[in-house]
Amino acid sequence: MDSTQIPLVQNEGTNSASINGDKPINWSSRTRKGKAIAIGRILFKAFALLSMLYFFIFSLGLMGTSFKVIGGRAQGGIFGFVNDPIAGIMVGILVTVLVQSSSTSTSIVVGLVSVDSENSLTVRQAIPIIMGCNIGTAVTATLVSFIHSAKVDEFRRAFAGAQLNWIYNVLIVIILLVVEYFAHFLEITSDALTSLLTGGSTGSFNSPISAAVAPFVNVFIHADESKLEELAQGVEIEGSLIDDGFMQNTSLSDEGAAALMLVLSLIVMIVALVMLVKLLSSVLKGAAKDWLNKALNFNRYIAMLVGVGVTIMVQSSSITTSTMIPLIGIGVITLEQMLTLTIGANIGTTITALLAALSTDSTFGLQIALVHLLFNIIGMLMLYPIPYLRRIPMKGAEIIGDAVASRRWLSVLHVAGVFVLIPLALLGLSIGDPIALIVGCAVMIFCFSIVIGNLWLKNRRRRQLSYDHEIHGDMDDVSVHISTEDDVDTPSSGSGTESEPQEGQSSPLQIPGVV
Image (tube, rainbow, N blue to C red; front, top):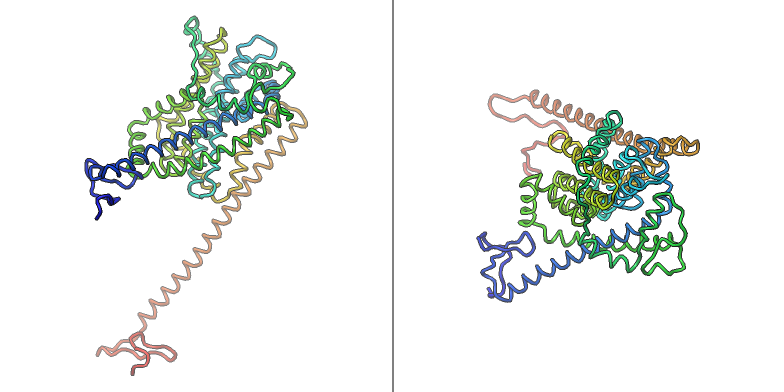
């Protein structure tokens, strides 16, 4: 064997390294050329991973800015429908879907609570909106999971992982909404904490990730944040919402320019995610996959703190959870590990609104930011430490993943239903408008009929399979019974001679053509 040809698989040793993750190679037996090639491959893959991750985050930033411009003029009136807790939750979901960021939507809520105007919100009105923002933040990861739709198993895992955040937050909202409605626990507790913190120093934090991506996003489109804040407060404005970038001086309307950038962001996201999946599949295999699993399983709460820290750095739980979707899609991390990181991301995203509130002089803004923090911490303490409760969102995510993997159209209906149609329907029911009431009831009936019809077809297919199994099972039992009776009734002589075969049958011991 030539000295430059090193076998890809060798005996395990202390000096083993790995290029492809699952093929250990003895590093000391490499030539200088082989070591240089190995280091070059590692550096190239690391550079490619960081580049694709950068473009992925860029696509999320471009998508978020596009949604801000598209829904900017609509978000001002949507907060006016907050007249009961259910309406508040639905408004929180819809606003978060519009801006594609719970950090942005909660910051808007903090601003509306902080201002002193006729369009401002009270803390009690804002609490359900904060709950809805936590539910709506799952839409970004859900959209990212569609990148894996070409492969059934990957799509099943990716879509299930994306639904963890949605199911987990829905469970917390159901519990805490009832407690808040009767006892106002979050309002009272946050008010007490605000009293303790009032008079402290204020601060702000600029995300290094946002600082690296924002200039590239601004080259294409930049939204006027001051006008968006005025629109959120119900103030009518004139002029364009786009104040910088290629789209500023085009002949297109704000909505048309933002829609064009939205299409571009989707294209960049698809390309970046496809490349990320391929690179992660080649890197995170074998030993690398085992090391990552050991690091995440070392201590669940340390892994949760990792999720908190990463989200504080990128200032967006959507980016954190969406980045994890390719990992769970290719089977590198499990649902339980995804849940741990997701809970950490939910806690980490509260820091953005908290810092935004600390930068103002309003105690009410600080109070609603603390409500956001308390909501996520109390939810974690309620569900995560108890294994039985912790398995509920994972089991629900598995059921949804299995359902959409075999019926892809259900995944589209699920996204449209839980993030748009059902919130709109419940909002229409809550505001009591006759037209909205009719439309809301129609949407609810349509969604439930689809779900019930799908369950009926599934149960019918299961009963048919069970019936076929029973019929074939009975036939097998009959055949076995007849065979047993034939064996028992077959005469045999004590001298050891075999019985003659009946007419039309051949002896199993007789070879054809031999007398």
